[in-house]
Image (tube, rainbow, N blue to C red):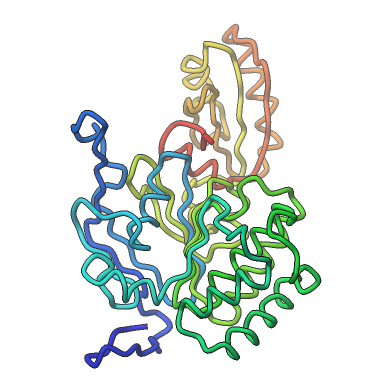
Length: 335
């Protein structure tokens, strides 16, 4: 949506329009001693999210993902830079911006004094819905998120997956232009995670724009049309998951562990016929190969033996988003 001159809202009709736009968005936290942190939590972030897409911020804890969402949803005031959601400056007009957004945070924020149905109903009333509309929309959302049989239940009786689905239902109750999901499946069991993925895909098919943060590679790969890999407040790469994996310039990744001789082993394996590149990353040697690498694997073992280096472990896989992250940072995607 974009703000009109009369203060009402007009839905963006261009499917490629940026519904979220940031320019040099920066957040520097101040410590208890009054001094700024040595590094910004988010540093000069330029970002565009298109209307109608599922966009992901992938990175480890501490990468700046939650702070970015905090600034976009008015909960965190930027140190500098600007951010717009639906054409509204979130710093200059936070109250108007809140009308356009739905937020699901990492923590359970359901009202424990209300039952499942009431958590939806009163959220709708808070956002200006009539009593009739709030009731009908609440009942529809309970059906949509498979919670109709729990309408009268206390929220403390819900499983983690049910509570998360209820928070998503509540976040879209007022039909926001953008739904923000901050680590939406953290702590959920695999079945609940898949159920929530299905719900997010369903929302997106109906036109909902979604921005989510995650440190789960599979989640980013399965859900996101585009994603930005973040670390230490910076975007390191931004593209579709498939394009990011192609950027590794390899068809097969062989990871070789050799104790404390990884630097030496990388030099040895880089000269093996059929190896595109070999580099030390995350305490192992990552060997990039073209094709399946079937004929190269024996040569890798032979080369290590000839150099007097004992191979402790060897694994073979296709490039993943973890591979991309390791290539960019030289370390694993830590929790």
